[in-house]
Structure formats: structure tokens, C-alpha cells
Length: 241
Ligand SMILES: NC(=O)c1ccc[n+]([C@@H]2O[C@H](COP(=O)([O-])OP(=O)(O)OC[C@H]3O[C@@H](n4cnc5c(N)ncnc54)[C@H](O)[C@@H]3O)[C@@H](O)[C@H]2O)c1
Image (cartoon, rainbow, N blue to C red):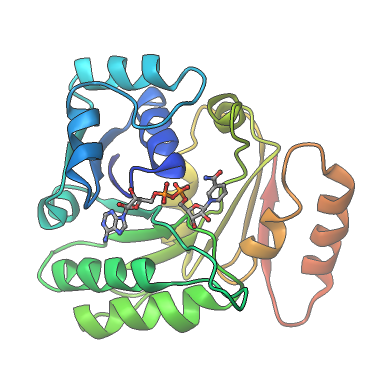
């Protein structure tokens, strides 16, 4: 699949390189020309075990490119991953300014883009953000409807710094929430070839699960999975190993 990754920080750089390693073609997009140049030259913008080798290999193969041009990044791909920063405010809430600005950019481009573009959030957000902040930002600027004209999903990462690449390829679980089955299946398919239990659920659920799916937390995962399946307000669509 052709995938655009927005934000070449820690989360985006690891995702971009690992996606190429599993057979995808990636356009990494950042507002920072320094980070874009780094990728273009086949160098890693962050210090992380195994990442420099993966990025060098991906760029050399022509499967990983980088740009500041978000219009091109969205137009030339089928799926966009949101990996921009969500820094904490003084009151402890998350500053979603980068996420909202990016969603408005995505909406403005998919407005005139044919086909079913899929938008996947990987940034840290609290439950409710996908449907109450991300969805309206994209719908307003695109004039399109989530789950009908474009897909919207949540696929939180559970990578640990210093073992992020290894964690990507050997996850405890892969958790995907989406507005519709088509988007959920497409998002899950980017992990084809990686062995893990796969959980597809309502778009509002993954954040709650991700806090429990960090490696080494199987007990908490079991209890949250029980909570999800027993909740009247959420729907666990499928779990498969
Ligand atoms: N770093 C971690 O260990 C870690 C772990 C878990 C979760 N997260 C979460 O993942 C998200 C990303 O974290 P990070 O550490 O990779 O962030 P980061 O700040 O290192 O990188 C974010 C990047 O997004 C870019 N950006 C901002 N707006 C953009 C736009 N409109 N288009 C393209 N690029 C844009 C910035 O220039 C920056 O390079 C955050 O929500 C964070 O909380 C991070």
C-alpha cells in the first residue's frame, strides 16, 4: 500500500521505516525541512536502535521518500498516518493544535481526491478525540463523511524507546479502531506478515486498550478486554490471533 506518514518524530520515523520493511511504499511528510532532508539523505532523524539501517535501506530502495509538500503526500497515497506531537498543557490536558491543523490540511486535499482515502491516528489522544475533534476537522474541510466517503481509524502505538523497532515487529497486540469495516481491514492489512493477536474494535476503544497493551502488561490487557467486551457503550468487533 502507498502510505503517507505525517510527523517524522520518534513515532513517525519508526513507523515509516518499519512500514517499508513490511512491503509498503511510504512518503514521510514534516513541516521541518531539516527532518525531511535527513530522510532524503537516508539518515535517521532520531537515535533509535536499528533505525538508521532501516531508513538507509528503505531510501536506497526508493521505497521511502520525504517531503514538506502535504498535498502531494496525500494525493499520491491511499492512507495517511497522523504522528504529530500532542504536547501537554500546564493544566495536564493535551494540546491538539498540531493534530487539528493537520486534519484540516488532510480534509482540504481529500475534498477533491477521488477514492476512499483512509486517515489513521497514531498520536496520543484521549478517548473521544477521534470522533469529537479529528472527525469534524476533516469532515468540515473536505465536505465528506467519515465511514462513507473516507475511512477514519485509530491505531495507537505501544513502542518503547530503545526497542521501538523490535516492538513494532513483535507487538503484544495490534489494536485498530475504525469508523467502518473497510477502513479497519485496510489498517489491519498494513501489519500483514507480523505475528500478533489482532483486535478490531469501535473507533473509540483503542486508546483505553493501548494503555494496557504495553509489552509486559498482559494482565491489565485481559481486564481491559473484558471491560470492552462487557461495555454496553462500545463494540468489540473481532479478536483474532
Ligand atoms: N516519543 C515517544 O516515545 C512517544 C511514545 C508514545 C506516544 N507518543 C506520541 O506520539 C505522538 C508523536 O510523538 P513524537 O515523539 O514522534 O513527536 P515529535 O514532536 O518528536 O514529532 C512530531 C513531528 O510532527 C511534525 N509536525 C507537526 N505538525 C505537522 C504537520 N501539519 N505536518 C507534518 N508534520 C508535522 C513536527 O515538525 C515534528 O517533527 C505524540 O502524540 C506523542 O505523545 C510518543
